[in-house]
Length: 119
Image: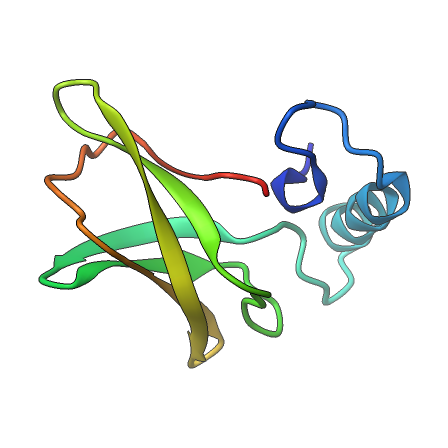
């Protein structure tokens, strides 16, 4: 199983871009089954830091770094269950791991969910 959220459409579970899904599956198999030095999965969030001007999300398994074209929306789940959207305005890569920064009025975060939304 691989994460394909970057290849999907916002209104459909099944991505039309089958080629990149197949490439991601093949890369995972090369690494996990055959032991080749390849990144076996897509970015995984490992830490969220709440800052005055937004949130900072750190990822592992970023390969050559995170790439973002334009603003990327994130849905934030508050502890009370309300969901609201913020936009990541830029992505940088520090020391091989990616750090995304979502700017805007970010209120209190829930430790349960902070999800990327496919555009």
